[in-house]
Image 1 (cartoon, rainbow, N blue to C red):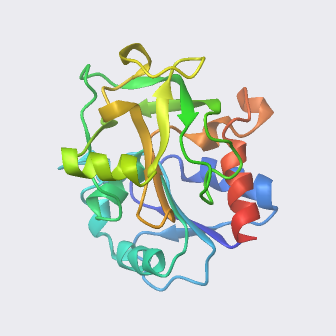
Image 2 (spheres, helix red, strand yellow; image 1 turned 120 degrees about the vertical axis):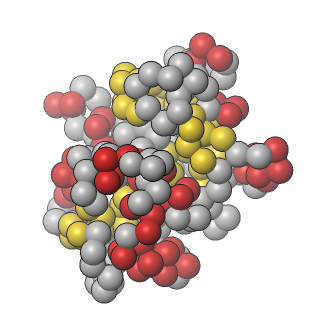
Length: 229
């Protein structure tokens, strides 16, 4: 699998993602500095978590205009899978690769803990390692993870099966108590129209090795490897 991880000033989960990709594929991913514009042939691009550009203006707003993002958009248009995790999700919405926006958490506090997620769509390269309705555990660590979209966009996401993950309880129930940030309809991750771009706030790379306390996130990277070779 020819994978790349985009690195912005302030990225701090890039090495975690690279390690998860290397453990699954046995191949060292390329670390792409945000000023690069000429990308090599790739099967997967990951926009990692962190605090790109210090989260000035809005989270992901400056990173969305980095030189490398022009190339990322071109690869997305060509069908290369793009995975945005936490701050990466924010970057993808700011860049227009995914609809909606990530707002301040409903409680106006940074939230860092493990949460349960329900898999809503298992028919994508990112989720093929799971099954629809499956409950998995992943960590979150964010201050602006409150997903919002207008009513028309939300309806389209639901109707087209583009909600990939929702926050849930341990048994899979969706309720206010299991929603850590006030996200619309408990949405934790969404897909683009073709199911080739995924943005999610939880961190699968932080639970992809038994030494980290679990492997629920590993299936995402294994599924991507199976999907793209």
